[in-house]
Amino acid sequence: MGMIGNYLRVTKDELEEYLADSSKLEERIYNAESYTDKNLIDVDKSWEGLFFLLTGKSLATAKEASAPLVWTLTPPNEIDPDQDIGYGPATYTTSEQTKEISSALNKISTDDLRGRYNGQLMMEMGIYPEVWNDIDSLEYLMEEFNSMKDFYNKATAENQAVIFFIN
Image (cartoon, rainbow, N blue to C red; front, side, top):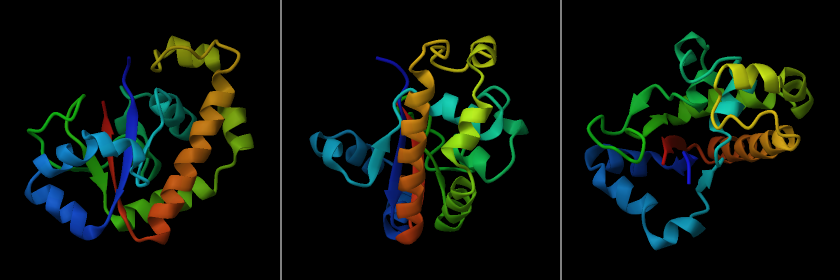
């Protein structure tokens, strides 16, 4: 098992529905159909590795990272602070904040990220899941980065907010 990072694209109306009744979010993400939800992606266990490549920070030092890229792991808004989706409450970015993230991601290439990759440092920093000395780790992160970038571009094109959670 492990800690899996998830991103869900939602309309303004859906977001308002989840803010009014957070159990509806849980119903959406924890049902048999969630595996086919085209608005839901998971970046597997790459979430902190991606965050490190994007910001140079870990989850422990995330508060030192700058917006908007910090929001890829620690969005500024909570759905319901009392709800535990798996590893704490779900957080989100508004459609405007999502556009800022998308714009920032589009300025970063996989070559940029390859240049920032330092498996030894990531291991020393305890970046989850601590597999960064594996030869395939860099390619794994590049695939998940491209998936994340495409996801945020779709959210921006459809004027959607993004909900993030770890389960």
